[in-house]
Amino acid sequence: MKIATWNINGVRARIEALLAWLKDSQPDIVCLQEIKTVDEGFPRADIEALGYHVFTHGQKGFNGVALLSKLKPDEVTNGLAGDDEDLQSRFIEGVFSVEGGVVRVVSLYLPNGNPPQTEKYAYKLAWMKRLNAFAAERLALEEPLILAGDYNVIPEPHDCFDPKVWAEDALFLPQTRAAFRRLETLGLTDAIRATSDAAPLYTFWDYQAGAWQKNNGIRIDHLMLSPEAADRLQGAAVENHVRAWEKPSDHVPVVAHFDFAPVSLG
Image (cartoon, rainbow, N blue to C red):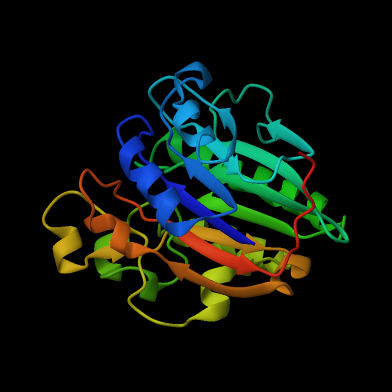
């Protein structure tokens, strides 16, 4: 089973690239972020025509997450628990039947948090605390769990082209990285770093200043795995060739392969 995450940066603007990638990469489950549309505006027909079930948690003009899956989920839940006043669309969880049980897959879009001296950074840290509580609760189930998405976190210095450039950025501040490490301390495994210690290995390149051409990137898109999912991990990769396509997102897909055998529910 191939599970992917991709910050699409506007699904309607990138629909041709998305369809081309789905045909080329053939993922079984896709976690999209920044779809930037309400649910009714999502171009689901074109995607469904390729054999995918489509589930969205949209928001007009900003944020928004989606799950695309060849396998029909048992259930889908929108929103991260812990703050009833948080109306931003950043979290969707699907439960899928596989041989021997289920696999839980989350598409998440963690807040950027910039500028750090504002309430935006406080929101980012609070959101990460809620994510930590959610992960702890799900880990207690001892089931395969995959938290996939744009974390807006640069975990280590070798995950960016120049740590000095990012030193004061919300994506790389010590508090941000410490919050990410707390997820790892719970028992979650970074799929990419479990399979490669290569540097540079990036998932995002800004549109400005020739960042892609110079390979001035950062790694902020992650698949974090419960022990039960990590045990089934066969490989992981960054499909960075997609960044060179016409009208690209500034992010690229990150994929992981697992030896789950799906159970189709129709």
